[in-house]
Length: 159
Ligand code: INI
Image 1 (spheres, rainbow, N blue to C red):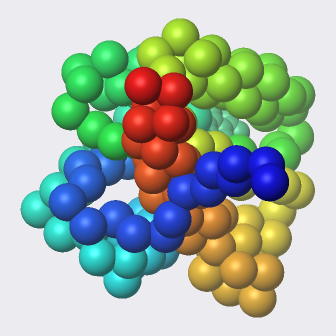
Image 2: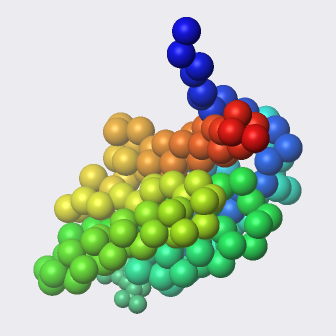
């Protein structure tokens, strides 16, 4: 029989950090609400959630890195909304943010999840922030909860 390892969706007793961009905050405030809601529904305490606001998504990786390195959090949840405008600015931001967040996760060993919406319009962004297409905030928080548990279980399994 193969030995199976899976994270469970319980946030009880865990501390989470959320890094969120103030740019497009009509959207990102909803992502934070969705993430906090799911953490508390899975047994986490509101007092165990720290929310760090950064100016724009480009600044997310630095704050995520500092929080992950602090050793205080089971996972870091990154939230933002990059909306395609009339310039190519968004293209530079998108590629750097995704790579930056992945780099923080690899370098620290702390789960860092990606809840940055990338889309063409404000309407699409709102759809993905608790509207008709679900919530990237909820998705990123669920992934953080599951990965935090999995990291603990892998630690136990490999001694
Ligand atoms: N930041 C975002 O989070 N979303 C955007 O859509 C966006 N656009 O399109 O410009 C954006 N720009 C700001 C950027 O993230 C930095 O804060 C800025 O360049 C300063 O470093």
